[in-house]
Length: 242
Ligand SMILES: C[S@@+](CC[C@H](N)C(=O)[O-])C[C@H]1O[C@@H](n2cnc3c(N)ncnc32)[C@H](O)[C@@H]1O
Ligand SMILES: Nc1nc2[nH]cc(C(=O)O)c2c(=O)[nH]1
Ligand code: SF4
Ligand SMILES: [Mg+2]
Image 1: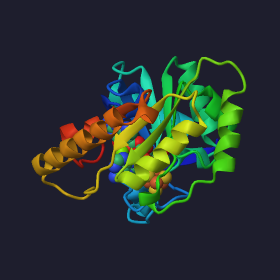
Image 2 (image 1 turned 135 degrees about the horizontal axis):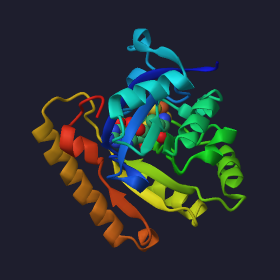
Image 3 (image 1 turned 180 degrees about the horizontal axis):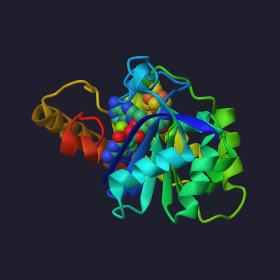
Image 4 (image 1 turned 120 degrees about the horizontal axis):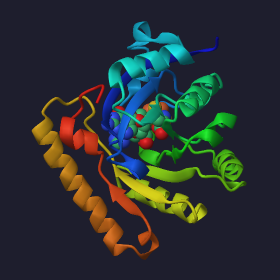
C-alpha cells in the first residue's frame, strides 16, 4: 500500500477560506512543501519543527481516522499542506474518498501537477505574491491550468491570492488578468501567525480586510473578484487543528 506523509487530521470544522468558505469539512494536512513562504501559517509542515510528528499513512489509515473523528458528521474533506500536489501517492486516498461519496477540496499553490487533481471537486490554486519571497513560474502555472480546464468536468476551480500590501495587489491583478475565466479570490494576509492575543489579532485583521475591500471598490480591474478574510482566524485566532 502506498503511503503519504501526514501531519494533521482534524474536523469537522468549517472551511475558513476561499471558494467554499463556510462549508463543513474535515482536514487532512500533508507534510512537505516545495516553497518556503515568509509568512506561511503552516510552516511546521516544511521547516522541520514538526518532523517527529509526521506519520506515513495509507489511504485506509487516513480514512479510518477521519471516520473515527467525524463519524457520519461530514460529507466534505479538504486536503491541504504543505503542498499536497507533491504527492502522487494521494491517488489512492482520493479514490477512496470518492468511493465513499465524499466531496474533496484541495489547497495548492500551482507549482506541481498530478493526474488526481482532475478528480478534486473544489480545487483552489493559490499563486504566491512578492511578499512571500517566492517567484511564480507562470509558464508552469499556464500549463497546469490548461490541463485542468481542457475538458468539461464537474470540477470547480478557483484562484486565490493572499494580499499583504500594494505590491501583492498588483501581482494579484496580473494573475486575475491572465486567467480571466477562473473565479478569483483575494484573501487578507495574516502577518502575525504566532501571536496568541486573538482579540488584538482579529481587530488588526478586520482593519486589513477593510483596507482590501476599499482597494477593490476603487479598482475597475477588480469588479469580478471576491474579497475574503480567513474566517477560521477570525473565530479561533492562530490555533492549530481548527
Ligand atoms: C498553508 S497553505 C497550504 C496549501 C498550499 N501550499 C498553498 O499555499 O496554497 C493554505 C492557504 O493558506 C494561505 N496562507 C498561508 N499563510 C497565510 C497567512 N499568513 N495569511 C493568509 N493566508 C495564508 C496560503 O496562501 C494558501 O492559500
Ligand atoms: N478552518 C480552516 N480553514 C482552512 N482553509 C484553508 C486552510 C489551510 O490551512 O489550508 C484552513 C485551515 O487550516 N482551517
Ligand atoms: S506554498 Fe503554502 S504551505 Fe508552502 S510555504 Fe507557501 S503558504 Fe506555506
Ligand atoms: Mg491554514
